[in-house]
Image (cartoon, rainbow, N blue to C red; front, side, top):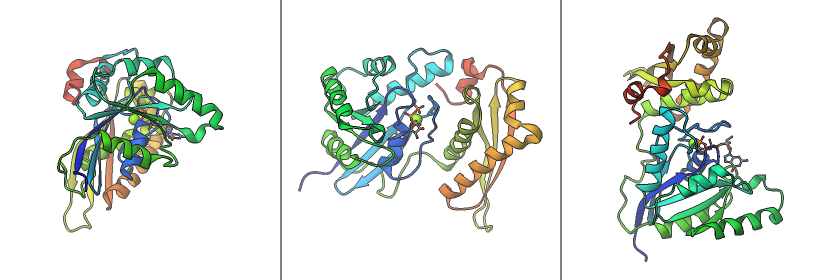
Length: 297
Ligand SMILES: Nc1nc2c(ncn2[C@@H]2O[C@H](COP(=O)(O)OP(=O)(O)OP(=O)(O)O)[C@@H](O)[C@H]2O)c(=O)[nH]1
Ligand SMILES: [Mg+2]
Protein backbone atom coordinates (compact mmCIF):
# COMPACT_ATOMS: atom_id res chain seq x y z
CA UNK A 1 0.00 0.00 0.00
CA UNK A 2 1.29 3.48 -0.82
CA UNK A 3 2.07 5.98 1.94
CA UNK A 4 -0.52 8.43 3.25
CA UNK A 5 -0.34 11.91 1.73
CA UNK A 6 -1.41 15.28 3.03
CA UNK A 7 -0.82 18.81 1.84
CA UNK A 8 -2.09 22.23 0.89
CA UNK A 9 -3.38 23.24 -2.52
CA UNK A 10 -3.87 26.91 -3.43
CA UNK A 11 -6.60 27.78 -5.94
CA UNK A 12 -5.40 30.84 -7.80
CA UNK A 13 -6.13 32.78 -10.99
CA UNK A 14 -7.80 35.89 -12.29
CA UNK A 15 -11.20 36.91 -10.90
CA UNK A 16 -14.32 34.96 -11.90
CA UNK A 17 -12.71 31.80 -13.31
CA UNK A 18 -14.54 29.65 -10.75
CA UNK A 19 -11.96 29.10 -7.99
CA UNK A 20 -14.54 29.24 -5.21
CA UNK A 21 -16.99 27.07 -7.14
CA UNK A 22 -14.22 24.57 -7.64
CA UNK A 23 -13.31 24.53 -3.96
CA UNK A 24 -16.96 23.88 -3.09
CA UNK A 25 -17.16 21.07 -5.64
CA UNK A 26 -13.88 19.48 -4.51
CA UNK A 27 -14.90 19.50 -0.85
CA UNK A 28 -18.50 18.55 -1.62
CA UNK A 29 -20.02 21.39 0.39
CA UNK A 30 -20.72 25.03 -0.26
CA UNK A 31 -18.14 26.80 1.90
CA UNK A 32 -16.92 29.64 -0.27
CA UNK A 33 -19.24 32.33 -1.59
CA UNK A 34 -19.76 32.55 -5.33
CA UNK A 35 -21.17 35.25 -7.58
CA UNK A 36 -21.33 36.26 -11.22
CA UNK A 37 -19.33 39.37 -10.40
CA UNK A 38 -15.52 39.29 -10.37
CA UNK A 39 -13.56 39.76 -7.14
CA UNK A 40 -16.10 38.12 -4.90
CA UNK A 41 -13.61 36.31 -2.68
CA UNK A 42 -11.67 38.45 -0.21
CA UNK A 43 -10.40 35.95 2.35
CA UNK A 44 -8.26 32.86 2.34
CA UNK A 45 -10.46 29.92 3.23
CA UNK A 46 -9.50 26.32 3.80
CA UNK A 47 -11.70 23.51 2.54
CA UNK A 48 -10.57 20.08 3.68
CA UNK A 49 -11.25 16.82 1.87
CA UNK A 50 -10.24 13.59 3.57
CA UNK A 51 -10.18 10.47 1.41
CA UNK A 52 -8.65 7.08 2.20
CA UNK A 53 -4.90 7.57 1.98
CA UNK A 54 -4.96 11.32 1.32
CA UNK A 55 -6.02 14.57 2.97
CA UNK A 56 -6.36 17.59 0.67
CA UNK A 57 -6.34 21.06 2.21
CA UNK A 58 -7.64 23.43 -0.48
CA UNK A 59 -7.08 27.15 -0.05
CA UNK A 60 -9.42 29.51 -1.89
CA UNK A 61 -7.99 32.91 -2.69
CA UNK A 62 -9.10 36.27 -4.11
CA UNK A 63 -8.89 36.64 -7.89
CA UNK A 64 -5.93 38.82 -8.76
CA UNK A 65 -6.99 42.17 -10.23
CA UNK A 66 -4.20 43.03 -12.66
CA UNK A 67 -4.37 46.74 -11.87
CA UNK A 68 -5.01 47.31 -8.19
CA UNK A 69 -6.99 50.53 -7.75
CA UNK A 70 -7.08 50.89 -3.98
CA UNK A 71 -5.55 49.67 -0.73
CA UNK A 72 -8.08 46.83 -0.50
CA UNK A 73 -7.01 45.50 -3.93
CA UNK A 74 -3.40 45.50 -2.86
CA UNK A 75 -4.27 43.55 0.29
CA UNK A 76 -6.22 41.04 -1.84
CA UNK A 77 -3.27 40.66 -4.19
CA UNK A 78 -1.02 39.88 -1.25
CA UNK A 79 -3.44 37.20 -0.12
CA UNK A 80 -3.53 35.66 -3.58
CA UNK A 81 0.27 35.61 -3.66
CA UNK A 82 0.28 33.87 -0.29
CA UNK A 83 -2.15 31.23 -1.55
CA UNK A 84 0.14 30.49 -4.51
CA UNK A 85 3.37 30.54 -2.53
CA UNK A 86 2.75 29.01 0.90
CA UNK A 87 1.23 25.78 -0.41
CA UNK A 88 2.51 22.44 -1.63
CA UNK A 89 0.91 22.83 -5.04
CA UNK A 90 -0.98 25.60 -6.82
CA UNK A 91 -4.00 25.06 -9.06
CA UNK A 92 -4.11 27.75 -11.71
CA UNK A 93 -7.77 28.08 -12.64
CA UNK A 94 -8.65 29.39 -16.11
CA UNK A 95 -11.86 29.43 -18.11
CA UNK A 96 -12.10 26.99 -21.00
CA UNK A 97 -11.21 28.58 -24.34
CA UNK A 98 -10.62 31.99 -22.78
CA UNK A 99 -7.11 33.08 -21.87
CA UNK A 100 -6.97 36.83 -21.27
CA UNK A 101 -4.23 39.31 -20.45
CA UNK A 102 -5.38 39.04 -16.83
CA UNK A 103 -4.84 35.27 -16.90
CA UNK A 104 -1.37 35.84 -18.26
CA UNK A 105 -0.50 38.33 -15.57
CA UNK A 106 -1.85 35.99 -12.86
CA UNK A 107 0.29 33.18 -14.28
CA UNK A 108 3.37 35.39 -14.48
CA UNK A 109 2.85 36.32 -10.84
CA UNK A 110 3.20 32.70 -9.72
CA UNK A 111 6.17 32.00 -7.50
CA UNK A 112 9.20 30.51 -9.18
CA UNK A 113 9.71 26.80 -8.65
CA UNK A 114 6.11 26.22 -7.48
CA UNK A 115 4.48 23.11 -8.92
CA UNK A 116 1.38 24.22 -10.79
CA UNK A 117 -1.55 22.22 -12.11
CA UNK A 118 -3.79 24.04 -14.59
CA UNK A 119 -7.52 23.45 -14.12
CA UNK A 120 -9.42 24.47 -17.24
CA UNK A 121 -12.84 25.14 -15.77
CA UNK A 122 -16.35 25.63 -17.19
CA UNK A 123 -15.96 22.97 -19.89
CA UNK A 124 -19.74 22.50 -19.67
CA UNK A 125 -19.96 25.76 -21.64
CA UNK A 126 -17.79 24.53 -24.50
CA UNK A 127 -19.88 23.29 -27.41
CA UNK A 128 -17.43 20.97 -29.08
CA UNK A 129 -14.20 19.13 -28.44
CA UNK A 130 -12.81 20.80 -31.53
CA UNK A 131 -12.81 24.08 -29.61
CA UNK A 132 -11.35 22.67 -26.41
CA UNK A 133 -8.46 20.52 -27.63
CA UNK A 134 -6.39 23.30 -29.31
CA UNK A 135 -6.90 25.48 -26.23
CA UNK A 136 -5.60 22.71 -23.96
CA UNK A 137 -2.62 22.17 -26.26
CA UNK A 138 -1.71 25.84 -26.37
CA UNK A 139 -2.02 26.15 -22.59
CA UNK A 140 0.13 23.08 -22.00
CA UNK A 141 2.85 24.56 -24.19
CA UNK A 142 2.74 27.99 -22.56
CA UNK A 143 4.10 26.89 -19.19
CA UNK A 144 5.61 23.83 -17.55
CA UNK A 145 2.42 22.76 -15.78
CA UNK A 146 2.52 19.49 -13.90
CA UNK A 147 -0.75 18.67 -15.65
CA UNK A 148 -3.57 20.37 -17.52
CA UNK A 149 -6.98 19.08 -16.46
CA UNK A 150 -10.26 20.18 -18.07
CA UNK A 151 -13.04 20.28 -15.46
CA UNK A 152 -16.45 21.66 -14.65
CA UNK A 153 -17.12 22.90 -11.14
CA UNK A 154 -20.76 23.13 -12.17
CA UNK A 155 -21.31 19.53 -13.27
CA UNK A 156 -18.44 17.84 -11.42
CA UNK A 157 -16.93 16.58 -14.67
CA UNK A 158 -13.34 15.31 -14.30
CA UNK A 159 -13.09 16.22 -10.63
CA UNK A 160 -11.81 12.70 -9.78
CA UNK A 161 -9.03 13.17 -12.40
CA UNK A 162 -8.03 16.48 -10.85
CA UNK A 163 -7.92 14.87 -7.40
CA UNK A 164 -5.75 12.08 -8.75
CA UNK A 165 -3.23 14.48 -10.27
CA UNK A 166 -3.14 16.56 -7.10
CA UNK A 167 -2.63 13.54 -4.89
CA UNK A 168 0.54 12.73 -6.77
CA UNK A 169 1.81 16.27 -6.20
CA UNK A 170 1.27 16.20 -2.44
CA UNK A 171 3.94 15.21 0.07
CA UNK A 172 3.75 12.08 2.17
CA UNK A 173 2.54 12.66 5.70
CA UNK A 174 -0.23 12.00 8.22
CA UNK A 175 -3.53 13.96 8.14
CA UNK A 176 -3.20 17.50 9.49
CA UNK A 177 -6.87 17.74 10.53
CA UNK A 178 -9.40 15.33 12.06
CA UNK A 179 -11.14 13.45 9.25
CA UNK A 180 -14.55 15.02 9.89
CA UNK A 181 -13.25 18.61 9.77
CA UNK A 182 -14.08 20.41 6.53
CA UNK A 183 -12.75 23.92 7.14
CA UNK A 184 -10.47 26.04 9.33
CA UNK A 185 -13.04 28.84 9.59
CA UNK A 186 -15.70 29.29 12.27
CA UNK A 187 -19.42 30.04 12.03
CA UNK A 188 -18.83 33.74 12.61
CA UNK A 189 -16.77 33.87 9.42
CA UNK A 190 -19.43 32.08 7.39
CA UNK A 191 -22.17 34.33 8.78
CA UNK A 192 -20.34 37.41 7.46
CA UNK A 193 -19.58 35.77 4.13
CA UNK A 194 -23.13 34.57 3.50
CA UNK A 195 -24.48 38.07 4.06
CA UNK A 196 -21.77 39.49 1.80
CA UNK A 197 -22.79 37.00 -0.88
CA UNK A 198 -26.33 38.42 -0.87
CA UNK A 199 -24.92 41.93 -1.32
CA UNK A 200 -23.05 40.66 -4.39
CA UNK A 201 -26.19 39.00 -5.70
CA UNK A 202 -28.72 41.72 -5.06
CA UNK A 203 -26.93 45.05 -5.34
CA UNK A 204 -25.90 46.69 -8.64
CA UNK A 205 -22.58 46.39 -10.44
CA UNK A 206 -20.43 48.70 -8.32
CA UNK A 207 -21.91 48.79 -4.85
CA UNK A 208 -20.79 45.35 -3.58
CA UNK A 209 -17.19 46.52 -3.89
CA UNK A 210 -17.95 49.37 -1.50
CA UNK A 211 -19.48 47.07 1.11
CA UNK A 212 -17.98 45.00 3.89
CA UNK A 213 -19.75 42.91 6.52
CA UNK A 214 -18.67 42.94 10.14
CA UNK A 215 -20.16 40.58 12.74
CA UNK A 216 -20.71 42.63 15.91
CA UNK A 217 -21.90 39.73 17.99
CA UNK A 218 -22.51 36.01 17.61
CA UNK A 219 -24.19 34.16 20.45
CA UNK A 220 -25.54 30.67 20.59
CA UNK A 221 -28.37 30.48 23.10
CA UNK A 222 -28.73 27.41 25.23
CA UNK A 223 -31.94 25.51 25.66
CA UNK A 224 -33.78 27.11 22.76
CA UNK A 225 -32.88 24.60 20.09
CA UNK A 226 -29.49 26.23 19.78
CA UNK A 227 -30.80 29.54 18.38
CA UNK A 228 -27.90 31.63 17.10
CA UNK A 229 -28.26 35.37 17.62
CA UNK A 230 -26.16 37.25 15.15
CA UNK A 231 -25.76 41.02 14.84
CA UNK A 232 -24.09 42.23 11.67
CA UNK A 233 -23.11 45.63 10.30
CA UNK A 234 -22.75 46.41 6.62
CA UNK A 235 -20.16 49.11 6.03
CA UNK A 236 -20.52 51.39 3.04
CA UNK A 237 -18.51 54.42 1.97
CA UNK A 238 -21.22 57.09 1.54
CA UNK A 239 -24.69 58.07 2.72
CA UNK A 240 -26.08 57.63 -0.78
CA UNK A 241 -24.84 54.00 -0.73
CA UNK A 242 -26.47 53.42 2.63
CA UNK A 243 -29.80 54.52 1.18
CA UNK A 244 -29.46 52.05 -1.69
CA UNK A 245 -28.54 49.14 0.57
CA UNK A 246 -31.55 49.88 2.77
CA UNK A 247 -33.99 50.38 -0.13
CA UNK A 248 -37.42 51.96 0.32
CA UNK A 249 -38.54 51.43 3.89
CA UNK A 250 -35.60 49.08 4.48
CA UNK A 251 -37.09 46.64 2.02
CA UNK A 252 -33.89 45.69 0.15
CA UNK A 253 -31.86 45.10 3.30
CA UNK A 254 -34.64 42.94 4.67
CA UNK A 255 -34.69 40.81 1.55
CA UNK A 256 -30.93 40.30 1.59
CA UNK A 257 -30.88 39.55 5.33
CA UNK A 258 -33.65 36.97 4.96
CA UNK A 259 -31.80 35.18 2.18
CA UNK A 260 -28.58 35.21 4.23
CA UNK A 261 -30.37 33.94 7.32
CA UNK A 262 -31.84 31.00 5.42
CA UNK A 263 -28.41 30.03 4.12
CA UNK A 264 -26.95 30.30 7.62
CA UNK A 265 -29.67 28.05 9.01
CA UNK A 266 -28.86 25.48 6.36
CA UNK A 267 -25.13 25.60 7.01
CA UNK A 268 -25.35 25.70 10.82
CA UNK A 269 -28.25 23.26 11.07
CA UNK A 270 -30.32 25.39 13.46
CA UNK A 271 -32.42 28.54 13.80
CA UNK A 272 -30.79 31.92 13.32
CA UNK A 273 -31.85 35.40 14.36
CA UNK A 274 -30.03 37.94 12.23
CA UNK A 275 -30.00 41.66 13.05
CA UNK A 276 -28.50 43.94 10.42
CA UNK A 277 -27.37 47.57 10.40
CA UNK A 278 -25.80 49.75 7.74
CA UNK A 279 -23.09 52.23 8.67
CA UNK A 280 -21.00 54.68 6.69
CA UNK A 281 -17.24 54.31 7.06
CA UNK A 282 -15.81 56.88 4.64
CA UNK A 283 -13.57 55.45 1.89
CA UNK A 284 -12.83 52.29 3.87
CA UNK A 285 -11.50 50.51 0.74
CA UNK A 286 -8.69 53.06 0.54
CA UNK A 287 -7.95 53.54 4.24
CA UNK A 288 -5.08 51.37 5.45
CA UNK A 289 -5.96 51.93 9.10
CA UNK A 290 -9.60 50.85 8.75
CA UNK A 291 -8.58 47.90 6.56
CA UNK A 292 -6.20 46.76 9.26
CA UNK A 293 -9.01 46.91 11.80
CA UNK A 294 -11.07 44.80 9.40
CA UNK A 295 -8.33 42.18 9.32
CA UNK A 296 -6.63 43.03 6.01
CA UNK A 297 -2.91 43.12 6.66
N1 LIG B 1 -21.09 27.19 -16.44
C1 LIG B 1 -20.24 27.19 -15.42
N2 LIG B 1 -20.17 28.24 -14.60
C2 LIG B 1 -19.28 28.22 -13.59
C3 LIG B 1 -18.43 27.11 -13.36
N3 LIG B 1 -17.65 27.39 -12.29
C4 LIG B 1 -18.02 28.61 -11.87
N4 LIG B 1 -19.00 29.13 -12.64
C5 LIG B 1 -19.64 30.46 -12.51
O1 LIG B 1 -18.65 31.45 -12.68
C6 LIG B 1 -18.93 32.58 -11.85
C7 LIG B 1 -17.73 32.88 -10.96
O2 LIG B 1 -17.55 31.80 -10.05
P1 LIG B 1 -16.71 31.95 -8.71
O3 LIG B 1 -16.55 30.59 -8.15
O4 LIG B 1 -17.28 33.01 -7.83
O5 LIG B 1 -15.32 32.46 -9.32
P2 LIG B 1 -13.99 32.89 -8.54
O6 LIG B 1 -12.86 32.52 -9.41
O7 LIG B 1 -13.99 32.37 -7.17
O8 LIG B 1 -14.16 34.47 -8.54
P3 LIG B 1 -13.42 35.55 -7.55
O9 LIG B 1 -13.63 35.13 -6.16
O10 LIG B 1 -14.18 36.80 -7.89
O11 LIG B 1 -12.00 35.59 -7.99
C8 LIG B 1 -20.19 32.22 -11.07
O12 LIG B 1 -21.30 32.78 -11.73
C9 LIG B 1 -20.22 30.70 -11.13
O13 LIG B 1 -21.51 30.16 -11.02
C10 LIG B 1 -18.53 25.98 -14.26
O14 LIG B 1 -17.84 24.96 -14.16
N5 LIG B 1 -19.45 26.09 -15.26
MG1 LIG C 1 -13.91 33.32 -5.40
